[in-house]
Length: 313
Ligand SMILES: *[C@@H]1O[C@H](CO)[C@@H](O)[C@H](O)[C@H]1NC(C)=O
Image 1 (cartoon, helix red, strand yellow):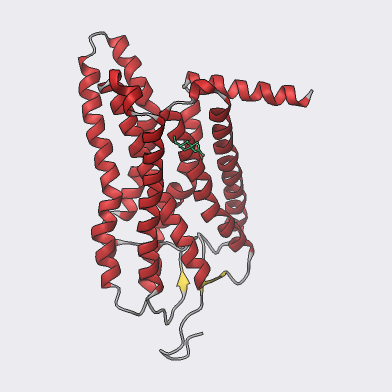
Image 2 (image 1 turned 120 degrees about the horizontal axis):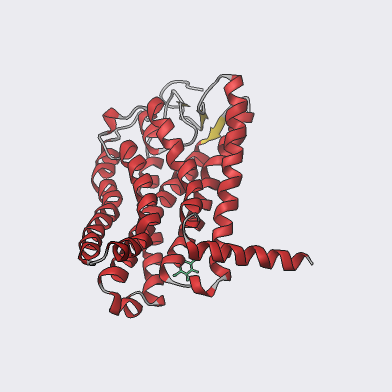
């Protein structure tokens, strides 16, 4: 494939998680199940929120958007990964690799901005309850959602265009299960300093700003909750944040451990496992985190199930 420096690589080999055929079967089955649970669970959440007017609130609209992004996210990663496990050659054309990277980055960033929008919603609901309906009006919510998409896609586009300009002259083996930014950068034979610089500056900014926003919101929320006199009241106020906080902790716990640090310390081998959690497991868990122990969500799910039942008869 590499006939001197002139010839450029037109495809990559995605080696996936393992080359052991026994593990391969087991991994294929588990990823297929996780994929189905992910798409199924998130679709049910969207349908349940659609079908119950009591859940037509900013919080649940954001949650429904989050489920939608999670479905996109998993569709970017898992089908390709499963197909690759079955294929002998493991080849991925360069353009497909770039497309996957584009949507992966866009979805991941949209997720984080939606989590920030949810934090804003909780902040206004708890710290400024009297202004809640005017501040979080439908128009504002739509603006927040649109802005999340726009920023993420612009960010992703920038990085994809910069990646497309690089030359790849071999080797073309990626020890990963999808085309992530760092493993691709490591294979390039061009000067990647602009990419690295942008990833470290603009990239860190885009990833960290929703995170910092969420932390600051929760500092204010915690202060407001501590002022509530009774323990029971405090618990009640805080319980509306519990699911959101769980998702935020999981999302940023894994994202920061892989993506926010100098690329010199990046290890494809070790970071793959965390990336599996980040790209496959967490999007699958979101629906469960939000529906277990959440009374409104459970009622909406029951309503959805009843409607399905009636349709059958
Ligand atoms: C996303 O949020 C907007 C604004 O709240 C809402 O109108 C829309 O229905 C949501 N989309 C999905 C797929 O839930």
